Image (tube, protein in one colour):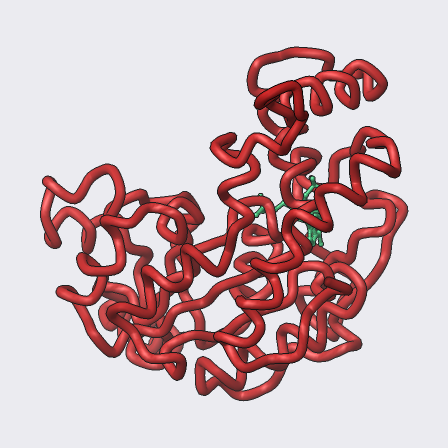
Length: 283
Ligand code: A3P
């Protein structure tokens, strides 16, 4: 009918592009895509699909370019983009602060040991190396993990895959500019186990009506062990993440895992003290 058409046109008109209200800044391989996918199902959220990399890579293109990369949104929506590189790039916090000192910062963190293995597996896929051979992957991970100093083997702290998990160092850079209240910290391990808990926390932080609930999440055969989200409680349609998320991890020897955990422990302890939260994983 004419009325419906008019309403539809109105809807269309109020859609516009604007700078984000919230940014998901990382950490890489902690479940950033899952979190964005899940929160995007909220009607009051409009999220950019791809990673924009404005503050780290395309800053010279200016804020107008950044805005042009944003999704369309209406006045009832908050706009979100995610670029996990932001967390670890020391240039970024000041740039974000200059754009909007009240911006909301979403951080998702998982056990840095699991995170490191996940990033390593991704790097192997990108290099098309040992894709279907987890034994080779495990050996290569261990080979790359250590450096020898005076005949002692120690963990190679400068390896990006290790450095990215030193969360407290990265968060400290951000806290030079933003107070603790600007951040929400989501538990990436729990996002797999109890996604509704983490979505509840995020919806609250973003000031959204808590409509994404436990009954919205389902485990399917399509995505073994990883939750998918029901788009609409009225029907069966679900959204799962792509095959590039939830990859098989190589089995790393127990003693190596233990060394990694010992290595990260002081950083983890300092992190949870800094953000004033109970540890997200056993540190
Ligand atoms: P793995 O593929 O190594 O298991 P990011 O999106 O930040 O790159 O994070 C990818 C990780 O998200 C995956 O790492 C996976 O463990 C995790 N993840 C969390 N929830 C998921 C879900 N519902 N479906 C698929 N992967 C999920």
